[in-house]
Length: 213
Image 1 (cartoon, rainbow, N blue to C red):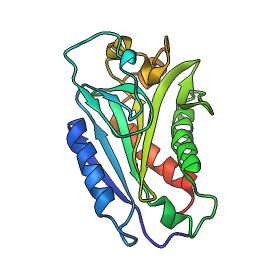
Image 2: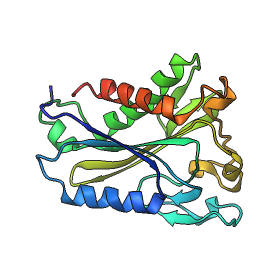
Image 3: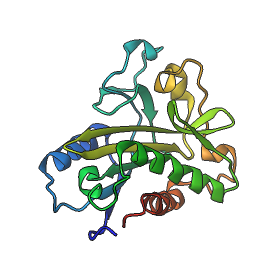
Image 4: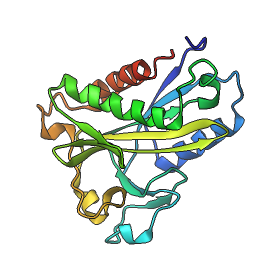
């Protein structure tokens, strides 16, 4: 077992860019003794473009701001009612106590945390090896993007819970033409589809999937 506990931070509603800069600062300053952290947050409406993102995936110009990010992946949308879980994990350190920890296993743990959470609501979902994220009936319910720096991860996943999905129509979500998005509220009672209920389940499942805390 890893001898440090993981710190969980509930940030509420915060602008994307300020939280992103805080993740960069945290990662740049951390050392081998710095505990890993999970940040739970919702962002006001914003498009974010991955480091290798292509401009043509923004189909229509809107009033929603665009932020060029350093995460992996293409363009996506964040808005209120979407639960975001950022994972700031020292992969290099964890590898010393669990040899099979890798960036790929971290991606799988993130995806599986969503799959397990949705299963509790009776929603079957799945991941795709060639298209990171989680899908329900060929529609994407959760996007995923990471950045690794100094052997440490930041960024994470964005699970659509109960939000306005229409801004996704202005982009090719995650760079996939015609990809349809869905959300938890499409499949369960809307009173049950809220970020406050979902967030702790995601965290619990993610930590269990890593198997190191």
